[in-house]
Image 1: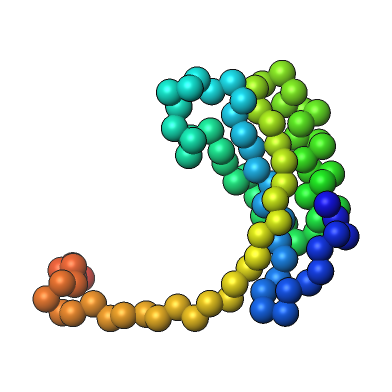
Image 2: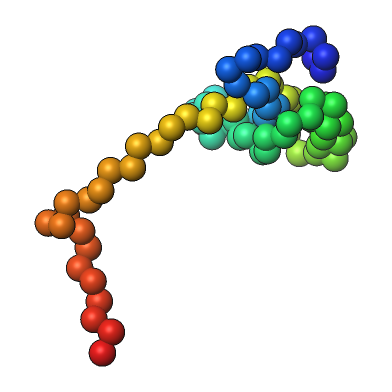
Length: 93
């Protein structure tokens, strides 16, 4: 996968290292079977980390892979909390 993708003008490529629990029972929800372990900027590092984790955890019922994703530096609007909804302040006496 490294090197196959062209940079995106709007957002930076990142690589999510993901763990899939292959030995989870069928009744285990999918969101408990899949975990994003880390996100890195270098696809070669992601590939090496996946190999390392798969070698290390081969007998533990986990399978690691990486997936490209994008970082979006989106504007976050901060809204103030109305005084009536603010938690009570503790006095410092």
